Image (cartoon, rainbow, N blue to C red; front, side, top):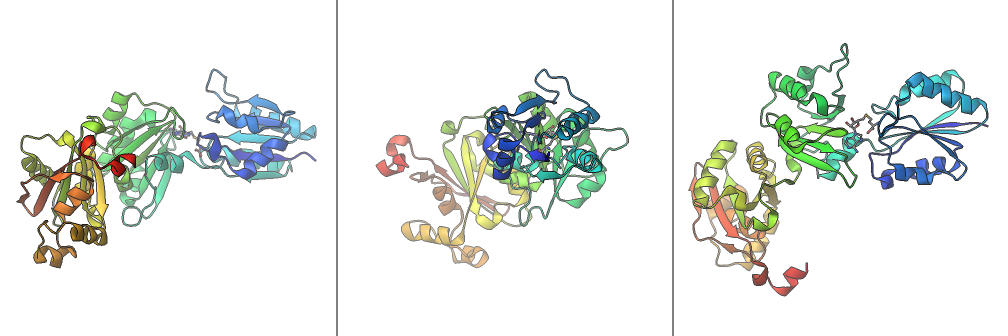
Length: 384
Ligand code: SAH
């Protein structure tokens, strides 16, 4: 008997398709392929299968939705099995629901096979979980595509404090970010735009809500892109540092009290650096529970500096190996460790050395370490 599958091909990387989808593709007589499906996936179709393109990219003319359904019904009624292959997940901005209803109306049995949706996969590729305890209790998937009557209520979305994941939004980015800013979302909210996620051609931009559209334009990012807006983006290590990684030779260990602002951190770090420049800093390291502090993440994102957090156990264990480092019982009473800045700076700079001057102001303390030159490194460190 003829049967139909609505299949998600995943975000791009052919290996991200499910086993179930592979099995269905291998037996289908007809494979109807949408935009954004990695052509490599078609190798999973059987030798006998007829492959029909219905997408609008890559020089093909887009097939209207009712024609797609008509083609499917024609094959199904002729006794052929049909696999309808869509990018990501068929039920996430994939119009899979419409096709399901049309086939059900025609009394055709349909199996829907999920795929990994781009809105989860794209952030994952750069270390962003869409939910994270303490940063986002949920995520909203929304289309940025404007349909006159169906503009999302950006103000309501901004008020939730949840991660906002925008599909099809890159062309309307200025509009979207302006509406979110007008809705009162903080200009320094961390954001990412990720183009062609999971493919070798992937590119991305990390920015803040007020700079995202300028950064995306400067980088020339286009469709298909996912936009992620919210504090979870602060978990992404900076990817597009102005200065190449090998020229970033400093690490900073930072201790700071609750409630300091990004500008205060910046002012104190700049003073501590003296003649050295911020873009020489490879990593800022602190206690793990301070790593997601909004002031710190904003400052690091602004300057594209990586952020590291160390547990009290790791810091104490390190201090045990370095008896010459200073310890303070006052610091211990506040933080549960005998020192924060020096061990954190050194933990982030294996084999490195502390610079002599430590700096403290406004409840912010800064220790700076220089990374080891490659020839200073012990042999086993190089091999790692
Ligand atoms: N059903 C698909 C979404 C189709 S809508 C899914 O679940 O992923 C098309 C939009 O998806 C694009 O405009 C873009 O926003 C997003 N998208 C799809 N693949 C992508 C990729 N590899 N990288 C970034 N965005 C992608």
